[in-house]
Image (tube, rainbow, N blue to C red; front, side, top):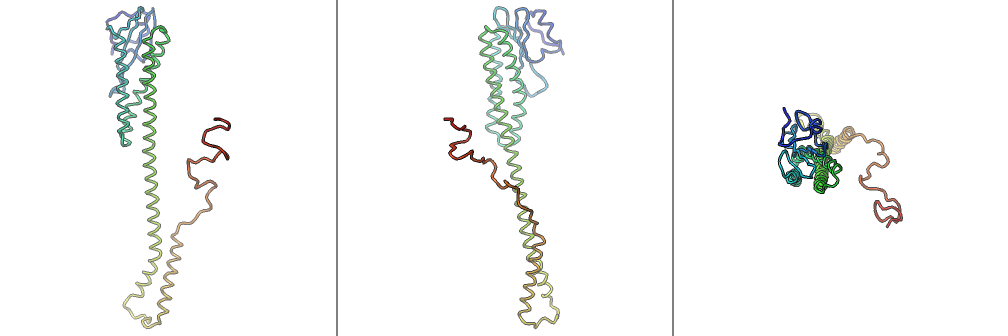
Amino acid sequence: MKRASYNWKLPAAIEARLGHESYGSQRIIQEAGQLLLILHQPPGDSLMEREAAVFLRQPDGRWLYQGNAQGEHALGQLLDGYRAALAALEAGLEKAAGADALFHILDRGIPLARAAGNMKEALQAAREAERQDAFLITCRDRAVDIARALELLLANARLALDYQLARQAEAQVQAALESQQAQYKLNILAAWTLPLMTVATLFGMNLKSGLEFTPAFVFWGIFLAGLGLGLMARGWVSPAKTGRPAQGAGKPLGKKTSPGKGSKGLGRSPGSR
């Protein structure tokens, strides 16, 4: 792979600082009164490749773009491309309804934010090198706004993704608790009914046991004995209670102790008005 050559004559000092395969990272090279500004186009689908956008500021203040005139217009279009990519991600974040959509935004936004941050640093270096160029000030300010907006967008996307994951984890825990409670109730019902069913099955068999003509209190005695067995089984299947919870357990999260009587709000220092 060979570095592209454009229709301009670069000073030998600048050529000596360029590689043979590509223009490299986003940066500036200032030699012999000329400033070479190397930027990158917004990242596309191929995250491994970067398309260079090379600008040359001549000693008379004119800007060239890859060998052509009207470099100021081309640099403005480059910034517009980053702004359009940012707007697309913002629209996607507003419509994102699940973890997949949020992950897609992060997947596209992270390389875009990295490229925008490097572009901002390169334009800031160009601004410091050419302090009298008002056009560079405008471009630097636009790049700063784009980089900051991308940082905020990625932070919001990460927060939304964390919220989605937290909600899913909370729903799973709630479902597990409900299942545990249902299983506990079923165990209690089984503990109550199993002894009675066993006794009823034994005494309900059509065999002569000698108890067919016993008084009624014998029946109630057997019934109470079955209930007693049910209570014993209930105590056996019931979960064992642990000791007292640790001090402070059970307090709702997110609530802070009031700093003292008379405080009017959070975060206000005594005496501040």
